[in-house]
Image 1 (cartoon, rainbow, N blue to C red):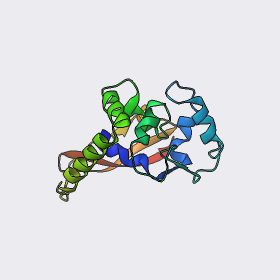
Image 2: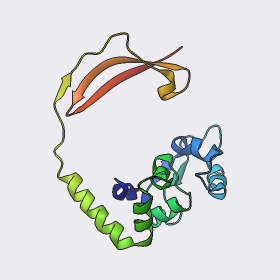
Image 3: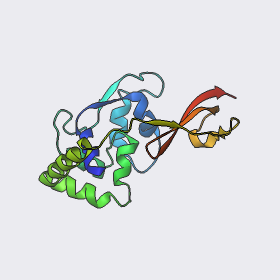
Image 4: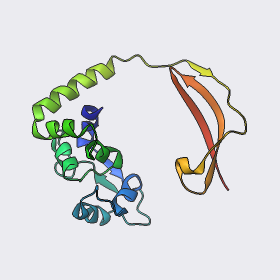
Length: 165
């Protein structure tokens, strides 16, 4: 998965998908990077404004994305957690320092992913009709009600509807 995340070396993300990260006061984001992103992503509004996923080389596929993560300059929180004191740190370091290793691993992962068979058969399963998903799971002041549940392969999928409390 770390190799496949390297696809984020190209492309852009909407402000609404990284706003919380650049306005948080955590230690896992470079303050200068956060300030630079805040210039195009205001605290309120600008949801559709775009920023490059890889600030060093936004239009070029390569390992600069992993170097950015090591410098706490991952735009998306889901990217930065790859280098945040966990088990994937060593892989990020390897990819940041060895472009050919990253390229080879990325290519192999794409081939493996391309050979996966899609899961197409949905099987319903029952849940209690009054089952609620706690607010703390998603945050906010909404209640999430389960409307439909089914199994896709080995995964249980819930379709939910949110309602204001």
